Amino acid sequence: MSGDEATTGAGRDLDLPLDALLHPRGYSADLPVTGAWQQDDPVGDRRFHSVGHGRPFALEGGGILPEITMAYETWGELSLAADNAILVCHALTGDSHAHGGVGEAHSTPGWWNGVIGPGCGLDTDRYFVVCVNVLGGCQGSTGPATLDPGSGRPYASAFPPVTVRDMVRCQASVADHLGIARWLTVVGGSMGGMQALEWAVMYPERVRSVAPIATALAASAWQIAWSAAGRTALAIDPRFRDGEYYDAAPGDGPHAGLAVARSIAQIHYRSDAVFGDRFGRELVDRRRVFGRWDRFQVESYLDYQGEKLVRRFDANSYLLLNRAMDLHDVARDRGSLSKALARLAQVPFLTLSITSDILYPEAQQVALRDAVRAAGGRCDHHVVQNPDGHDGFLLATDEVGQILGSFLEEIQSND
Image 1: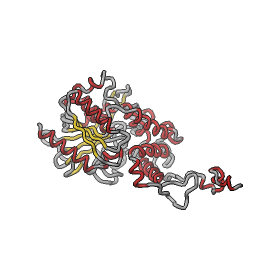
Image 2: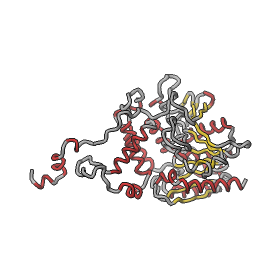
Image 3: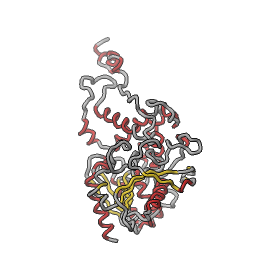
Image 4: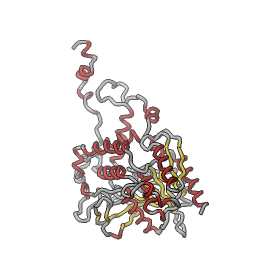
């Protein structure tokens, strides 16, 4: 081989040992086929409610579920007048464990610790805070991993499409069960913000205020494109088996597809500045540089995040809920956006933007603010200076909590 050939990419690869040509990522052998909560698992802080008392539930898209169970958690005490209740709505891969610690039944700490808790913006010494695992989720609420009462097997690919509006109708049933006629506020970010918006439109008489943050009136083409790439990565994993993977042995589930989908999402959930500051161009092994699959630290981080999600989430739920986000459009089948928002004049809104959020940029929350005001309503808009991208609404807990706490103080003082 000539010196010139040795410096080409092809020549260099041929000179390397075989293991340098193979992708080094080997997922853990014990990864579950699903991270969904199962009936025999520890309950932890979950509580359960049967929607419609076991009667069939018709979905917006035309499907029917014979029965639905919703898992939820609560913190604080409901006042005698039931006027201090707050509904917290979770994002795509969240669940009902919005506050609390790690335990046998909860593999991760509460995803909004610091916003929810004693002395926090959503002060559990003052408010009764509720979080419901959404319909189609995988941590106790009815979803694809749930046993179909007709067959005794998981619904899997037979689980019908759901929308944000279906999620909200199930949450309304939980509110009835808890004796809550009207929420002090409904708050959530991202997909949780979509739920808060639908609460305001579907049940304006049942909300004293709403706080949809880091979200949009409708999913944009940019958001749908990112979601489509992630769903495709999951679906083409041979172990996905068109959604019929629940009988597979541990390690033989669609973990690679779900992990890659998570990696794709993790990139646009954060920001260039955060990745640069945390990882730069550091390599996993500084002695290995020129092999085709020698990895940078940021690649290792994405692999870690992917495997972490596999252990607590379900691939079918990911596809289902991700698609529900794409379908989100407040104006759909309501004539127009102005008609959809026409009933909101008496419902105060709060929306919030993260400066570094490229997935749900500030312009979308400004559009929300302007649409609510054009309908004759009130909408406060705050901007949080934070480098963490879309995940900033989860990570900037002090700033987000302070804004929410001040908003609630004003809502109560005006009553």
